[in-house]
Length: 302
Image (tube, rainbow, N blue to C red; front, top):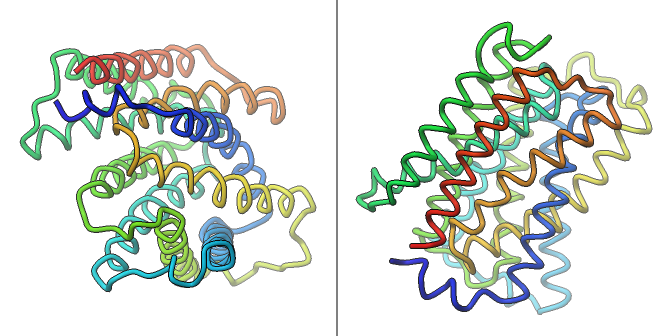
């Protein structure tokens, strides 16, 4: 199968990039929750990705020369599409949802992503193993627990469903990224994806009227700090590592971040923001993580 030859050549760089995605992305759920305390969701996300995209493009041109940013119109369009799916459709919807749900619960819901990827692979004609199907069933069962009104604690159902929609968009973007033409330089790809998503998020924020009633001087220092953390660590470092992994490692291996991130996010949410971890959230989250673990372990043996 497609993962077998890559599995034998997994390098230290791949494991290093995975470690960054594991830890840094697990902490971004906490940072997002802090940002939306005093900032509107789409405008703050737009500022985050546009800033990170332009900075990454400038750094890439400075370190590798302007030619490193070279891309054909088709490659630019591909990067823009993936960026909009991953960051506008995926990440920004999570930011919006975190105005209504705890950061730990959002991370547990996002863990369903590998299950959607298995479904997409099956729809494209591939044949995942029986264990992958069992993992999908487990993941969907956990998702059902987490999305039941009243079971997930004092949260709004629309926020939970928004995160589920975000996971679908993220899965489609991840699935498409390795199957469409992309520029050869992963840093350029990340810069184009983040810039396109940043513009898209700003347009959506303005369309929603987030600028009305928003006073820049009323933004708290902790929200500014969290936004800076998201720009530097969440976007410049971790998203670039993820974009590189999508082109350099088996998707089933890259997807392991989805059951490490929730553990980091839940622990940080409880420790820093005193978020309650109710037993239904713990049980539903454990079922989702178990399902994802089964999917990944099955796929890595193929």
